[in-house]
Amino acid sequence: MLFKTFSAAVFGIDAYLVEVEVDVVDTFKPFFNIVGLPDNAVRESRERIRAALRNCGLEPFFNKGITINLAPADVRKEGSAFDLPMALALAGCQGSFFKKVPDTHVFLGELSLDGTVRSIRGALSAALAARERGIQNVVVPEANAREAAVIEGIRVFPVKSLPQAMDLINAPESFQPISVDVAKMLDEASQYPFDMRDVRGQQAAKYALEVACAGSHNILLIGPPGAGKTMVAKRIPTILPPMSLAEAIETTRIHSVAGVLEDSRGIVGTRPFRSPHHTISDAGLIGGGTVPRPGEVSLGHNGVLFLDELPEFQRNVLEVMRQPLEDGCVTIARAAVSVTFPSRFMLAAAMNPCPCGLLRRDGSKRPINPALRLDSPSRESRAA
Image 1 (tube, helix red, strand yellow):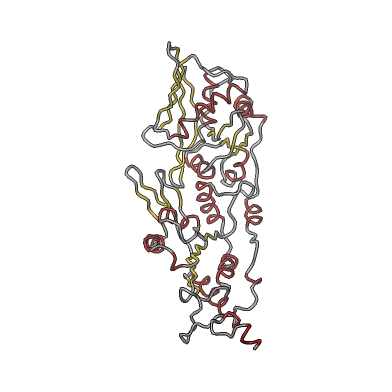
Image 2: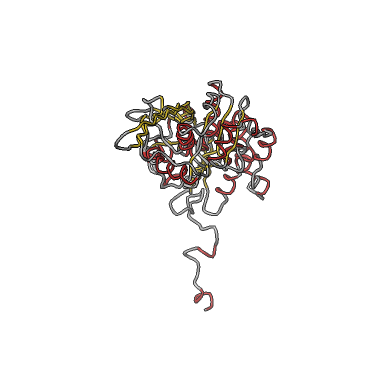
């Protein structure tokens, strides 16, 4: 008995369609195999699927042989988004549907043990891949509905549970796709929590930032501790041009794949501001891992990457930023895969003029607060 559904997998920040094929046969020794280069998260999905089907009133095939193939089989699959399409295909093998699942639906979602559909990564990229393949309907978790609905030309159906997804297949006319106003979403998401107008004084620093932002130049802020370098740097995105819809979608794709997108907003409408700690590794900065993930330079795409205490960063970490700064992208190569992430950002850095932070232009090291001077008289001598 064979049943098919369709899903999508993320590769870098792009996605490609995956055909989920389920075959159930009678056998003396039951088994449950998932093939097609699945990772550990995909292999563990069989336990989640079994519990979800049982708790939703559908007894899984414990006494039969189950083989699930994720095609194309020569590309590694990772993540938990295949739980829902695999569970639906198993339910289809049991005869739970009135007819075959049409090839105009893409299913995405992670299942909990009670059948609830949880959010996933890369819903926006999957929606783009479905549109490119001419598939009009995308079924996603309710938490990812606004994110996927940003793409025009497709219909997005949010689901909360496995039974609701089954009802969608049996009676699609009773479900309405989610409708969003993309322009309104972008306008609501483009509000910053602070603004450059909050800064009093610092006219030279603000003028330098205005010049740098107008020409998309990188900038280095040098000053003693407490001078306000970090404060004004955090407000750089507020004086950059507003994000266009194309920039917002591209930035949202990166944040969605990295798992840092706020589900309530659905789209990134403000210029990203990333400020990694100086102990960050080179892989954390440019991205990496067995399955490459975006690093800080990519999360700061179309925004600002701020390196506070610049001299404290390791030399090899600063050296790996050469390609992102020159090419606007970063390529991560592994033995079996090579992924390119966009990384066009404005680099802002801050540092003290010397290790103690008190060096002045005339070469002296006078503290900011005269009461902190090492050569100042003690209380006892002043009292005498």
